[in-house]
Length: 83
Image (cartoon, rainbow, N blue to C red):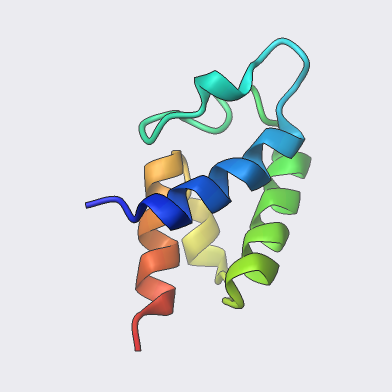
């Protein structure tokens, strides 16, 4: 189950880093950051940093390695926010 509020917050972060040839409508739960959204690795790092700030969490290197899709990012956020 996707938390709609977290999903929207994540989409708002991702859309800042989309290249000109990709629209915000392309951001779906199954969207692959690099292959489908054309986000380069430098911008992916920026997204991670923004997500950390927005959700007050810290990503480990292993988390970043697993963050291939929007759904992966949401799963990591949810896991980090669990008490």
